[in-house]
Amino acid sequence: YRAGSFGLNACGLAAASAALDDQEFQHATRLMAKHSRETITRELTSIGFSVTRSDSACLWADYGRDVSNLVQQLADRGILITHGKRWDSHQHVRISVGTAWQTDSLLSAISEIAS
Image (cartoon, rainbow, N blue to C red; front, side):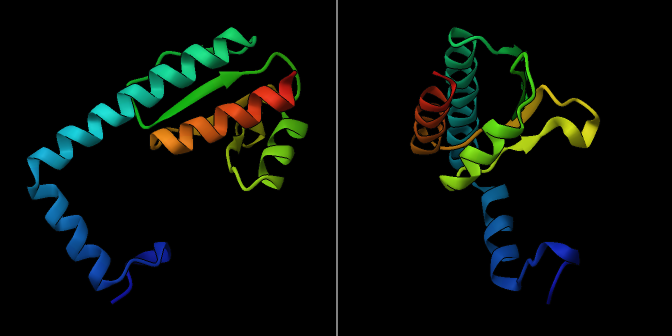
């Protein structure tokens, strides 16, 4: 079974279904996302980004200048964020929240690139 263009399979769908029934997992995931959002917002703000408040699984950040070079340099390091040009916002990036390791990797790379 394949669901749409997302490449989901029966095993993945079964795992997703089980996760929906696991209240402890959901709570831990919400806490992780909240911590990631807060950490990313704090750190990006400290290096000059303007970050729109969010309660979702992603953040919208304004770099104050074109983000093409930043997005490319992050991609070269295996870190993928979304360029705002998709929404005609060339100074913005969309960043998905993730694990502590993913958040640390992202922020470390951005700090090196932005400095």
